[in-house]
Length: 411
Image (tube, rainbow, N blue to C red; front, top):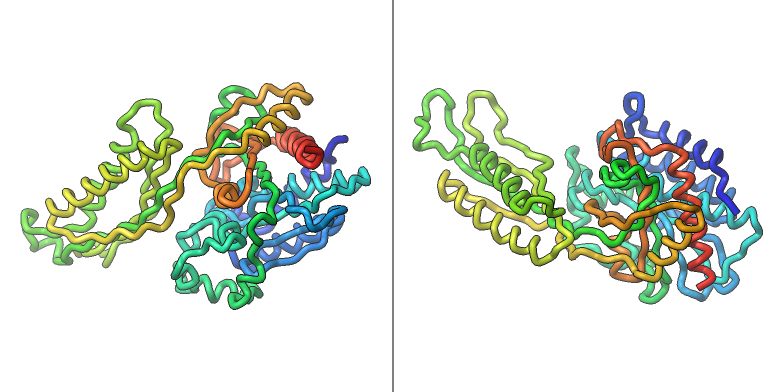
């Protein structure tokens, strides 16, 4: 039993046209008409595969293949269809389309599972529009945080308004939550988004766990003044302080050679943003990740100390808001064993590797066992229009996923 590689490629090519930028790029923001278009075409493929479909009140697209015993906890597969603002064609999409293809293959082979299977495209995994990711996957578990609906995008549209415009009813979140114990396990296929598999010339990897992300928004406040008249020694330049903190993030994250720690400042906003005014206020994001929680906690303290010292040095005040803080989460050994067994059947030498990026599996890991399959991407490039995984590798990944699902169902 094999998936239909031609159909899978056609689905990728069709989805890549929705929100297309340039030759190979994608911009499909969460809770927008473009994501709705993606949902509509994915929903048609789900229905063709024998699934019923719905969009819940968090903005998740859910396809369900009813099992013989619908009261059993459900097997969930999926990822997301929203993209980065300057993204590629495969991030998230691979997990949704390969999962649909797996269910289509089961249906075509007249396999009716004992337990139901759901394929979910989770809402706003990426998190860039409202600066808080994993919205849909946290939502179904009742793990949203206070104030999330009040977060606004760059155009001033709040999450609450975006959800309403998308057709969701925020007063009925509870109806869209999954009851404790109702999820049997979660399986996600994803492009690696790193260079390990490509460098090793391996099409498939078995994920051992996901690094824990720490996200901050940092705001520095100084004093504006004329750039031509305020002497350098008495300035309160918020951008100078921010520059030193950005360097500090890099220094702290790289202090142990070879460690998987990563630290990034990905966005920065300057006020009043004039050529001849000293920057009074700077807001920027910090992303610190590590699979070693103790080390990440040490680095967090180091960075807090550096921020305090730098702001004192430049006579600045500062505020730090914590947007995300998650522990590293490890995949279930029994699911990894099934994935490894399927790779061996297909004569694949599939190494185990950690995931530095977080995924919807991170949220689901708090509710059930989970496993992940990585597919090689060229040069490890992701969150970039140059992101590329071959359709051959994606078909291999989908076949590994198919065998894994059969193994899980037969367990």
